[in-house]
Image (cartoon, rainbow, N blue to C red; front, side):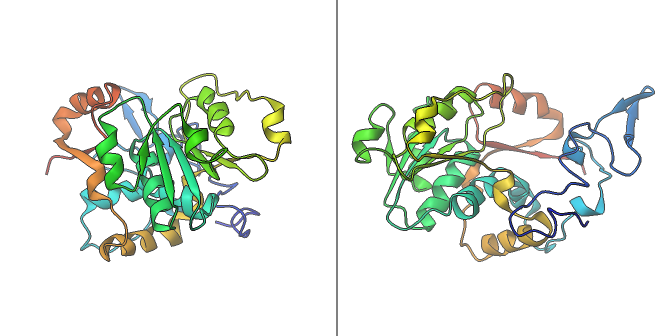
Length: 270
């Protein structure tokens, strides 16, 4: 594809393909699937829970067939979004302090990215105490909530909102340092997408920045991430807590809703 975003080094988006929020194919604005004469829409032009998918060539990425697809599938989003937020969007520096709100797959991947960049303190904030041990394995140094300011001597250099709660965005901004604190938001809210924050938080020098797919360009960057996985430079396997057959997909969704999993990989029938 070619648009002003595609040719710019400042963006990983595409005006032509966009996010395909309407659930239809770009070429003719229709769907490729139907049930009983009713259209089945393509979420983000992918159709994740289909045995077969029709996608635009701009959305297809070629990787080595020797790689385990049931693990590198996490690099199509989730793991890559978190790593990219730390590396590409925030550009976390060595010795810096980082606070992460939400330790799901995305948040843990942010922690991993921050650790690989040499961050000295990585604080994880999550309402689920079971995330503490998993967080440590991905680089989280402290699992605390109300004492972020004290731990970071006035505020973190970087904070990441990985929950999808717009109210947490303001909290993440408050946890950052005056003057240079950077808050990156990655979570996707269920409802009420408007963000409200005190103007003084921005006036004092803090920056709020959004991150889509961690700033990666899928066609060129996903193969590089797969290579890093193959070379054991990044951890992905630890993010998969369940492998389940497609027949148990509703059980997988329940685990997700109950906050009892990180990633459930669904295996299609052979």
